[in-house]
Image 1: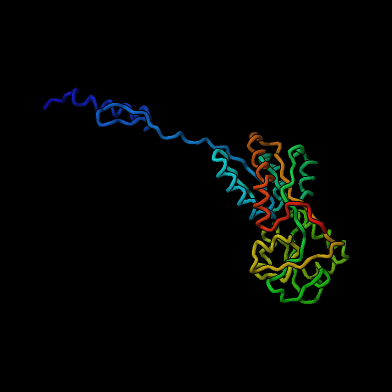
Image 2 (image 1 turned 90 degrees about the vertical axis):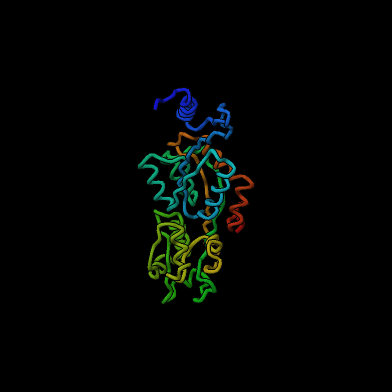
Length: 277
């Protein structure tokens, strides 16, 4: 039986259109090609943000909301201790945004020329507090109670976590650093790990941020610290000098500091205005 090119022509045309168009052309029942009307895929810009774990819950929600409003931008966030993240950025010379858990570490980043100072903005504020297990079973009501025999304490590690540096300042101000550290049984390398020490019942108390109560409201209670010894910090954000996507990075920072961004932080128990002590 012979093969007729006449019958094969429509098939050859169909194969040609599909092969060359990569699926972008449709063929009607009459054999007439019709351009695909589906929208082209959105090209996405990926940002790398190094963020102190002190703001993990609200920053995670803010990222998700921002990406819904900006489908062309994806924010990849690495959470951790502010000092550890700064060292990683500096050594590897990477990152688009640095957002530590305290202004102290942004000051260090500026001195190391890791961020652009003119892009620095304040996202929220952090107030230190004594975090205890729900119901305060050990009746801890002040820093002085942390030195009692049998009280187990956890602290963030100074140098790696901004909260650790703040805790040391508070204890020195109260003249209790040595006594309290005698009751410290573990040090944490991020704010997330610090609050988990209380949340999981591994210690009786930690010096943390008052926002930790909103991380686990059924597990953590807050005891205020004497205002004389408080060391309030803010959460800043700035564009890294290594960024090649500075316009997009600025868009994310602008969102964090917008009314919508502040509302997200406030919902999670963070102060978005300077607290009055």
